Image 1 (cartoon, rainbow, N blue to C red):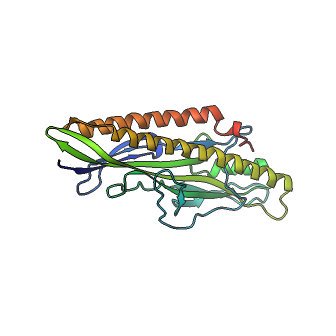
Image 2 (spheres, rainbow, N blue to C red):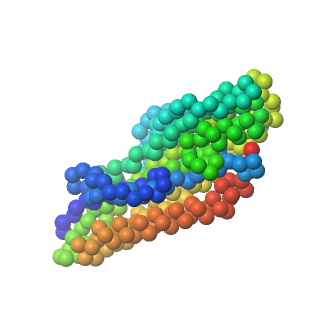
Image 3 (cartoon, helix red, strand yellow):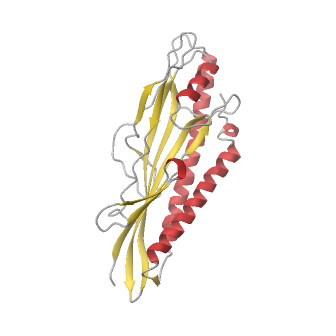
Length: 278
């Protein structure tokens, strides 16, 4: 038998674009498939916030979590800000931020199974003395995109496997799938005069948004395991065709993942039914 290692990247990035990239020696061309899971904000249905009223920055680390264990936290993706004048009646202006997607894991020499790296939460600041001012700043300064998207769960899935040859047929073994996840949320900085009911309203908004975004990540984890299982099921096929079959099957699961994420947003109205209204 002649085992060889194949590594591919199934990445969830912005705008569902398709690109090819060479990942280095002994690594097959990479497929990059793009998507964000957006959260939206509106008068009635609002989604986005942090776990506290102040911005949260995850501590830098390289914490890797093996399959089926609790994710660890490492450094969040950078949010690059440029000034944006969105201030009314003495309210400080927020800044327009840009969200940089996390890098995919190189699964070439990792252990079999699913490895999940949770990069925590990146934030952008918003200001306001009342709910309307805060809402306008979120809409104006969100880095997530159009249509009043206020928050996002961003993920990238990569995979690698070993091929074992027997005559003219090959089998996949030791499939390993990597998942990197990141949340981008707004952070409100209340002043000393902020009314208690507004702070309570924001904190409730925060908790509901966290629940919604964690739901997106849970779906990503589910499909990372499905991709691993499917790769390990590809056995005794034509060696010339096996990489194409693996890519085809992983692309099909990626499409199912996108559908599952869209269905989750539709069912929850982007978190509104989970209490994320501000």
